[in-house]
Image 1 (cartoon, rainbow, N blue to C red):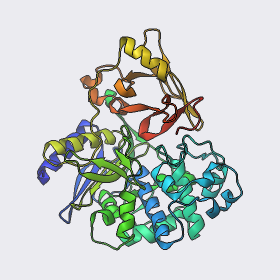
Image 2 (cartoon, rainbow, N blue to C red; image 1 turned 180 degrees about the horizontal axis):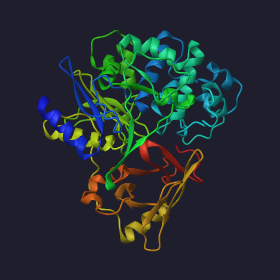
Image 3 (spheres, rainbow, N blue to C red; image 1 turned 135 degrees about the horizontal axis):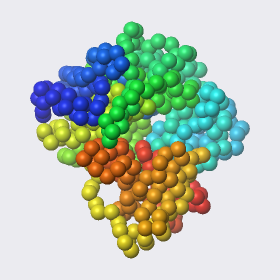
Image 4 (cartoon, rainbow, N blue to C red; image 1 turned 90 degrees about the vertical axis):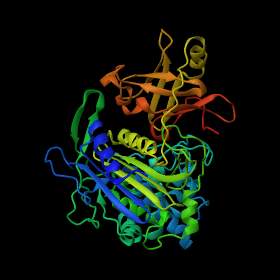
Length: 466
């Protein structure tokens, strides 16, 4: 186990290397919590980060939503594996596949739903779910993982319908206050009541472009109401350890029975989710450390901040990293790797293997399999081969990216000039990540692809993946 001075020096060095203005790193080990701090909450003001500074959780908010739904399971108000349609008036009479989704599928991202709900004109949860009643599924329910914020919109609406409470009131009353989690809402949501934070400041957010060493402030408004259950909370790193405390034995109230906490951690899918996790439970990702031990947690990001939570229930060890920069994800990956080199293994997404890309005849044969259009909801991306045989990914509102295809149909995206800053590690975020094409289990043909964050894109003409 590294010493406190080792951890403090490592955090300081990596934050500077990855141009992160401010960070908190909280560690719970042997029943004690220690918080390490770096830098400023806002470059514009120079206000220092303190242990009380609140950072956005982004998608780690989903842990709260999953816990609330599991409390309803505990109370007998809902069932994990029953269709949700009869519980939601807007779906009871509406045709379409959404009404057949189950709580287990929503919380584990296996309902086959596309990623994002329609949030134009900022609809209520009920209106958003009603509009999505006939959504076209990407895959057969329960069969394939595809990360879906829409699934958590539906979960939030289910909570609202069953309890008669808003998501915020339920989260505050049944999870945040009992666990003593300082909290608030992302941005300036006008209809969001104050949390437990009182006057505690929220950090500013920053967009970092490592190849050019540029850092710019990001103005983050409040999230649309439909995305509140998926990503609206802010807290501190120590607050995040309190939030996850029931899973790793921290002192506090029992917000959920041990068997249901274990159910949340049990992987619904053990399929590798390239660049994301090694499996997924109910609101929790599953990671394996170098010793083969399972850690659990969730990552989150916004337009200018990142969050990473990991905990190991058997040892009671937990860590939380909060940053106020988009490069915090890369910094966190490097932090966990260097802590492992110092003898402290934490469950993490391992660095992708250095396989040689396909070339020549092998690349041409693979290109025949993968070229085409892939869609998720309204978003379509295209894979095409250029005259020289190289593969290119075209995405809406983004520059084309060179697609570097590997054996097994995994791939990387190259969007930065070769040798930027003289270090490939400092290319764009996605230049480090490993993505994958997937085959339809029924036909054996390439029927989809995973891009960032485990989001499935289905090949046109394939229909639902099986």
